[in-house]
Image (tube, rainbow, N blue to C red; front, side, top):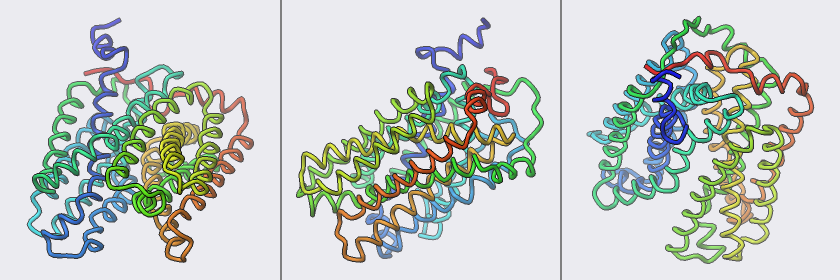
Length: 416
């Protein structure tokens, strides 16, 4: 074994490059969601309403959805390491622009610029992470990279919100930019490069993946699963205060349970998905549906609500890395994993937006603050139905081969 390979296998047998990708994912998770707790501060400084300031969140989500395919196709002739380094540079510049914005329009521009890095970094990063480990560990590798997102919810976002209120909302984005600088250094030092020449992805084959029924069904699961999750999550604070009867400290505890559930669910889901991908999705989506149904029925109980929030987060995020691997497998079979993997990250954001809208709709029509849980359960059942359909229509021998087939370019990366 070469010294370069040994260097890759430090940190408990996990390639150091995956830790670099996880750090970048942590920064992305913080910058995406921390804005929710900083909106009143930004609105006050810019002299606008909080709903108007909410465009700082909306513009980011739309930027991820639109920007991911555009960035991947523009950068499809670049080596993956070069693309990832450039995306982190964009991430740093976007957060610096947001932090230093002299006016609201500049802050919006900074958010949109930052969002351009989101989908490509996570989508291509998932392909890289899975290429650095044996086939039987690929879902775990993706889950380890996504650990950055769960830790962002567990610790990064609360810390960023505290920093924003204690110092300034701008200080939070300067801090996130600093995380981006650390990630950039780690990527340059640890991310492998392609040592075998690959033909660059072409637009035609990459787009053809979206005509494949398996890819489309897998992406439908991507939309419906997170839509269920965010239908409830978006309204969790008023639901816990006004229905379950929690005070401010109680809501903080609920959000901690939620972050803990994300962290544990992500690791467990990735580990078991390496053994049986589709059965794990059946269990996580079905479990999420049952928990959300119980949450709707038992929301007035503090104990039951606490348990349901933890389990909702655990089942919900246990499905994320399996879904991402499923899309990568299906797109790889169609010969075009790059664009599909990155677009799938945008599909998660689309699901988030749909879930938030549906939850608000049922509340606005007078069904109560707990009603989003019932809608979320239905959406999770729909995701489970699509997964069952995909599992039944896929040929078992072909799926077995897929689980051991590297995505385009996998297996040909070495450390610089």
